[in-house]
Amino acid sequence: MKRIDIQYVTKSIGDLAGVPVRIYEDGEPIFFHSRQDFTADPIKPYLESVLSVGGNIGYFVTPYFNYYGVVRSGKYAIVIGPSRLTPMREKDIRELAFSCDVEVGEVDRFIAAMRGLVQMPLESILEILCTVNHVLSGDKLSISDVAIYDIDETASFGSEEVLTPGGVANEYGGEEVHNTLAIESQLLDMVKRGDTVALDEWVKGAPAVRGGRLADDAARQMKNTFIVATTLASRAAIQGGVDAEEALSLSDSYIRKCEIMSTADQILNLQYRMILDYTARVEKEKLGRSPSRLVGEVARYVRKNISGRTSVEDMARTMFISRTHLAKRFKEETGKTLTDYILTEKTEEAKRLLKHTDKSLSAISEYLGFSSQSHFARVFKKYADITPSEYREK
Image (tube, rainbow, N blue to C red):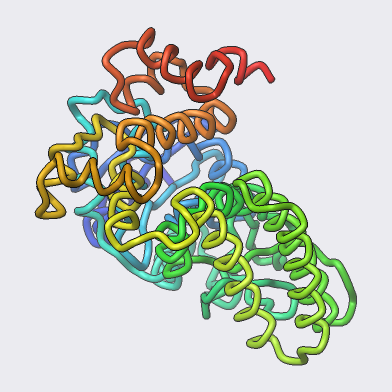
């Protein structure tokens, strides 16, 4: 098929589906079309992973649960997406914009473009892929030839639909893959931060986790996966400030409870409760054993607005309370000033970005709302006892 024909088909798909489409020739971009006004292509942080998906048809799911579909025809690859089932949180879109190197002044435009994407289930993307594949190659594939549904080998946090992030699906069937690394990192960061709000949001759109075969028996596989998850969660909670003996004893209790269960639903529900329990314990350690509603609202506000300048005045206005009264109440209940709390949380977010991204110190500084890189460095050194550069090297 001629290039112009592929462009015509691809543009038509994008207009009908309401999501961006692209064409790559031998791995190089030659065409992009989107009804949304994107300042940067949201595929940027995942391009290598998306293009590495094998077979004539495949898909990739990002850690934010956006999915991209891929159709290949000779030296050409058509990529559709992102789409998802539920709206993205603004905080997640801002993080994605940061990963895409969107200029600070263009972030709101990027957010508007992401909000304008048509939401659809993965099955709809797969149907589009099958149709395009038929047009390009003549093959007649159905969703069952593309999707990987393998309940026995997965562990899910509340999702009925089995997605395989980073997995390969083609006419020869799905290959065994491990997709857990990005998801594990995201979950353990939530536990370590005590971020119960983010965890609840995560669960609403969570895909299944494909962790590789740990046992031949399905029940044993799920229990082994639970044991691994509990071990990782307990260590993350200890890093978050929970007493080691408390965390390890809790781990033993959860594993014993899991061992007497016999159904998938019981194990999966217990796994979610276990993760949430550890996260809530870290949150209490950070905010005090019995945080009041006001303290909880402050914590949620800071997490939601961690990027950019976090204003105490705006926070007080949102909570319908005076700035002076809010600062006084928070200090009385937590022993910390609001400024110390905000800068501590920004330092923790900076640690995550330094560890898991290759963004420059100036980019991280700007993203977190510091007035300058030197200001960011001073704050980081104060609250982390180490410079940002030294932390990244370690």
